[in-house]
Image 1 (tube, rainbow, N blue to C red):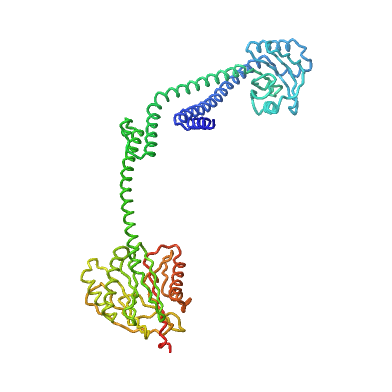
Image 2 (image 1 turned 90 degrees about the vertical axis):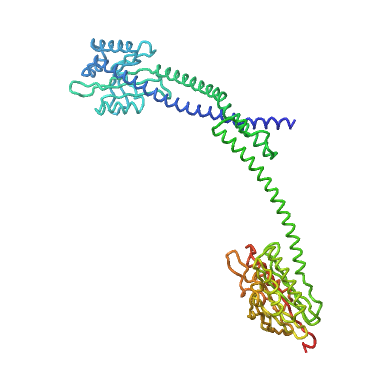
Length: 550
């Protein structure tokens, strides 16, 4: 039962949202709106013109009635209460005129000084009106302020005619118009006001007839519009749009090629035909895009898998094992900017008394840099086992790389050999960052050692060794340029000053703690800004043997 109700509701909702329903409803509403506006405008104009005609006719009757009246005798008529043959003759003439021209009333009045009351001198009444005439001298209040104002204008000579139109609200004598003219004596003084009242029954009937005709015309237009819609709009607009809607719905759900194109079903060169052609083009391009995206996605997944494998291999190469000794502690980390990086570090025992320590930074990033790094790392490691001089090791490595460096890549290297029995380090620097050294009681400071040329830059380069002695408790911090050149969202560099400050947060801590302090400072400084370069750090603390300590 509930499903049936939902189906009915859906059907009603679909009917309301159907474009055919919307269009025909819009046409009907538009016709009703414009028809109503035209009807109102026509009604007002028709009423004004009809009222103007009634007004002019009422004044013509007033002018005719004026010829029967002698204004100089009005006061005398009132004094004698109409007891004269001239009054009676005039009254009869006014009555005959009233019946002849089908006026409701023709009357003559005299307002008081405040115009609040009027006194009737003549009151001719149409025989068919059903009203009894007022006797001469009858006094009644002025009907309303509109009449009062018009009386004042006529009596004070401010106007030579006036009228009042009443066709709204409660009116005792129905809709009518009253035309008024002043009655002046031989000296030009206003003695009274002649009024002619004409009923506006014809106007009311004409208005009603006009409204009926306009309604019939509007209804005819609606019927005609519905017919034309079914004949033309439905054929040339609605049906093609339904085909387009059906096709787009099918394609959105299946995303497969249609059996036939929309342009084969809709033969039109107008906007509907152009829309059908656009839909056909969109479907074709979408299918092509999906095919390309599928291939690209598969390729991207393959590359991602290979990069993950490469990153695992690289991490395995960098996982140097710290020697299990009491006279030295060492720790290093590397965070690549991409899946794989070009930085590397290494530390390894050459013999029982010597440890090789190396940190390097390959030009570039990504897979090429990581491959160059792996080759260089193995060369340095192998040659360290042969030579005891870091300078000779770097020279041999440089010559080997320069023989087949088609990509013109290079690498900065700091290489040192720590003699564990004495704490002396023999080192050489191939264009790498200055190391930082911790001296007991003084904290970490940069050691501006001698720089040689980068490895792989050109053949024939010679490097120089230098000694760096460490006392028990002292430490060495090595890093790549990814540390001082770490960049914030405001494009500000981390710098060596902030690095040195982070090193001295706990300069006597373990190598792991020292590197963690630097990494934390970098992370807070960079915040959410992206990492642009590999970031590698190494710290070694010399503890010394018992003999050295003594």
